[in-house]
Image 1 (tube, rainbow, N blue to C red):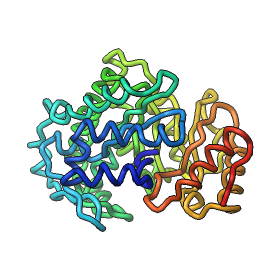
Image 2: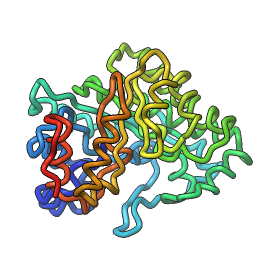
Image 3: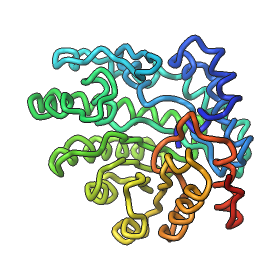
Length: 323
């Protein structure tokens, strides 16, 4: 998952050399190094680009900064601001990310996949409207209800620029592309179709029109049954499941034996021991068919290295040295 290296001491060493998090993301040598670190330590099957889902708003001309203990901060966008977004060239203004992709692909063993990604349009829009991460996202939902045309314009701007962003990543060497719709929960089916499915389908249509045939994964975290429509209607190749998804039932409901990914509880990874061992085995027992073992969300900074190694060993050998 994204941010896989945050628990590693070698990541913290590199992070300390960047003046801030955005500068870190836009420094190809540093970003490439921390992308490769989990592969070196654990020999995982795939690397995921070190970047952030909020780089595209920067390309669109919005300010984004990170505050320790609070996370990302933005100046909340208004209806009038949306018409002034710099859509043309937005993806070009974050071009250092593509240099990172090229550097990683050049150093990554040919047997390992490189995953590029973007944020889902609705998720990125919530940050732009709320001005920060918000568990309830009430302001963004109200904005969608009260300003439907402006909301559609914002989502379209994000879909266009995100598609270009993914196209550039694919051309730079990413083997797989992923769309992180981290705030997909709590939407009515009508809103979910409008705010999540339609703009995601627009991204994928544009990526495919550019001749990119590489797999595209989607992660509509917490979407419940809406995730099934997402799988059918967006054009994704594979889908990631959050921790709350029963993997056996999900498998049966997905179209055409679609590959799926997930969904170990990150909290179990943090706790370790028998709790982690049981949680890993449950995923292995309940998932079937084309399945990519992964977490149900991101890696937290306080995860122990030996816990991650135990999970990798368990998956590959049937047993792990859990402590």
